[in-house]
Image (cartoon, rainbow, N blue to C red; front, top):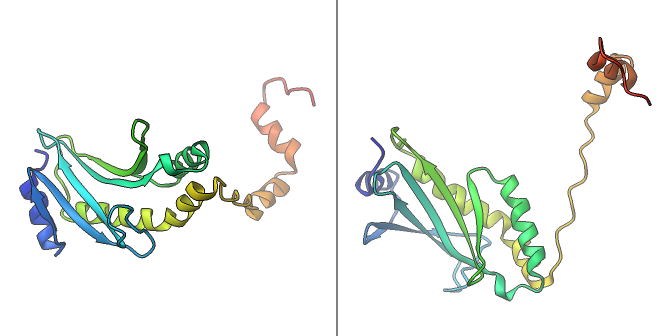
Length: 185
């Protein structure tokens, strides 16, 4: 079943999202709050929508968001992008190590399924929000070579209370080793 460029165009029209199509690729220009395009200098981001030949997958790509070759410390930027990939579901930061391009992608695998009516709009919004959210942090890492501070570990009082109610750490550990030999402490 899958999808087609025509179906995605229909979804964009229903959602009243302006777009252009050239050679089977849809282009949507997103207005941004924080992100400034390095190519145009405007607060816009280009998102390109590609459909696989069999229509079983759709890829949204935001090319040329950043240029790693301009980074003070490339390793810091790569570490940050890897960390962000763990924090952003669906969205992936990608790096082309040959030309330094940092881009964002979202892949939708449909298989035999169909594309839900608002999935493209939601994917485009996800991309714009993600890039806008992390723009200042990524730009700072590129220009200064510094990683942002790690977030403080969350203190979970409910977990602490559960341990107390169970009789402490040794009692809880005993539950896991009941019937087996407990390790030496």
